[in-house]
Length: 143
Image 1 (cartoon, rainbow, N blue to C red):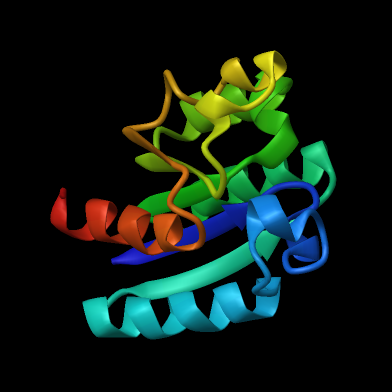
Image 2 (tube, rainbow, N blue to C red; image 1 turned 135 degrees about the vertical axis):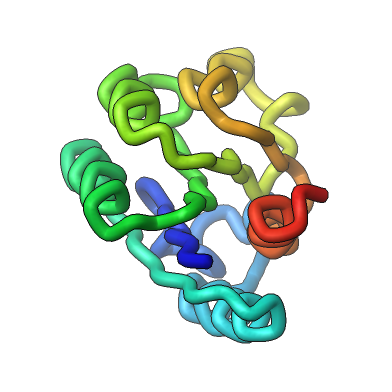
């Protein structure tokens, strides 16, 4: 099984950006942790992060051609604004788990809107970086 872990804007700033909300661990820590977790699950994992909407759309489309089996996706701020990303996910039809480090349901009103939620097979929010591992588990085991 091949899984793409896709991250949107500012996720590269983990550990720096609002650590009381997003934690003190870096993006590099997240990648290394998920590599180990994926190896334990026996899956191939790749990573992509971009602050640019079109680059994320390109990565989603490329996932189709690379025969990716599942996407773990934290669209970050684009969750609430990007019809283009939602359309790309619909177009490729790859099972996608939407992940949010913080509990977006308990945050600002604008964060209650998700263009991804209706397309995703599952949404995991408020579990910190562990949400990514839980998303991999769901794609692999269905739980």
